[in-house]
Length: 299
Image (cartoon, rainbow, N blue to C red; front, side, top):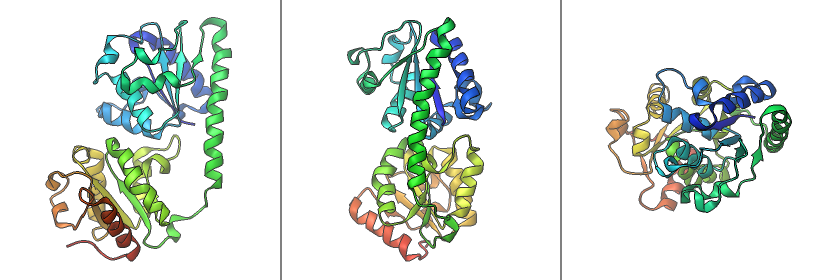
């Protein structure tokens, strides 16, 4: 289990800290993400938050007496952005009601958050009832963990080192994840092409950078999803730099949206790409044939 705790500091800071401590005792300290503790000094706040939401098994929204207010109407509000990211990514969202707060109705929320009102909420009281209520929450989270574990056990246990030319590292911007899943990942897996993909390939409490490096080292192909968001991501550019040094003839850029390729690396414009902005089905077929064929795509 890895849980992300979303809260407003002026609404439920103390409660968020107490809940985080209790969950950490049960699931382990590395299983709980709370920004005040988990973001390294100097790190890009937005980038880290987005990455963590993609990796979590449950997204807890702590809703206190002053949570619902004018700030939620601001598209740049961090709490709103966090919830939008979780809802869009299909992460299980659990509203946690504190201070006798009622669950907001759909009409009280921005349209992008209307799905929040349909989620089953858990009320957690203070005082002597706190631990009893958190026990209920923990059982619900354990149920989510059980489902994930069952799905994992049903998947075939394949050693990536045994695969030949069909194990692919997919590098992309967090903001493009839904497109990547819909237009690329699902079709590669249908064809039997295994993918190393951050959302499913990094385990709970794993060290992010170390696991990414391991994933790249195991893969036969490096697939780069090109977009402006990716060009702005230092994570993506670091991954591409590694691939140019270590997999120079196994890099496949796919163009999700047009942008200046020189923003990624001076060598990227020289690498043959596949354009998904034209006919997606044709581009997808070219991609699959290229990966299964095993030939070099550098020019």
